[in-house]
Figure 1 (tube, one colour):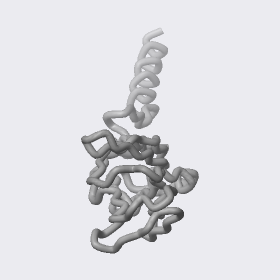
Figure 2: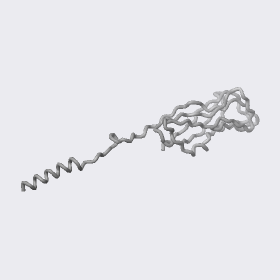
Figure 3: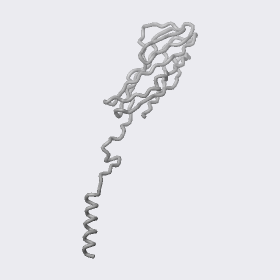
Figure 4: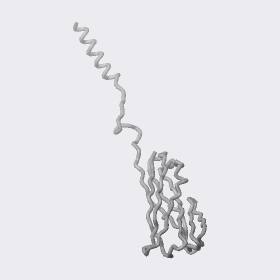
Length: 162
């Protein structure tokens, strides 16, 4: 019986000494938890200058090109897409969804902005440094009797981390 107890104690000691394996929880895992994304606006969406003409549209594409239909484009003010810097864990997949907005001039003038969501279908991986620039264009609907002035407004963009 004494030998059996001694053997049992040795077996318990050996199983505790050599039978353990390394387990990881979130805090001890060698893989870092995902870093939340941060978004910075680098450039505002601008349609430049134009006159309403017969009414129509002004479109800014994601590459900064401008097309007009029914309005007369003027070149005195620069036009450009909105540009955002997304920062997060390298390799994170990101896509976005934009919403339409109303622009006003403060004295009754109104135009409708339609955000170009055609580019949001692609999913971009953040670079090895953990960032990516995303350009967003849109189309401005201009009425024939839209009064002149500086129009401003705010549109919403939701960035989705996958």
